[in-house]
Length: 164
Image 1 (cartoon, helix red, strand yellow):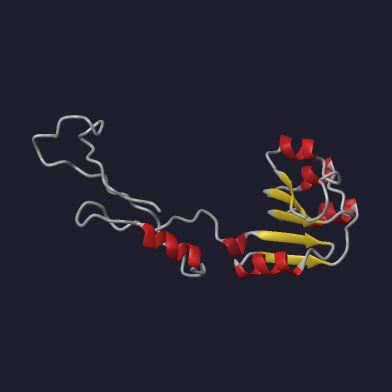
Image 2 (cartoon, one colour):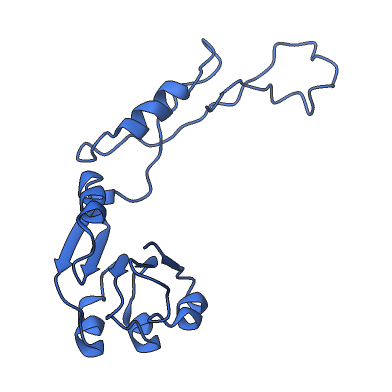
């Protein structure tokens, strides 16, 4: 659990001599949660784990850089229902396609996709990776990652992983 024990700014290390005047504590400001963002159990646990010393710090609220509901997940070839349920529970924007797509169709579909979930029949070539302007990762829900051009993906900072 996170502990927010404030450290005086006037002390450079725990072994330093205590200051003669009252210490000045760092105030932390973060943005508020957008009202449309779901509040998950993990979020509740994070907020409960914050320990605030009375008068030392202002209330800290978790910062979210990108709402999950804005993250588009493309799931091809009937990815297992458990994976679909997990993404849906977390409020990701999921698009399911029951079959593999040709390279041309995948290039068209992947333009605004953040997460691509595939099985063994979908081939993710360098051309597909190049067309993916928002892709964050490729999950292969099968045996291996041979159908993904991992070198092209790595060159763009996109991890490819296997999750059978």
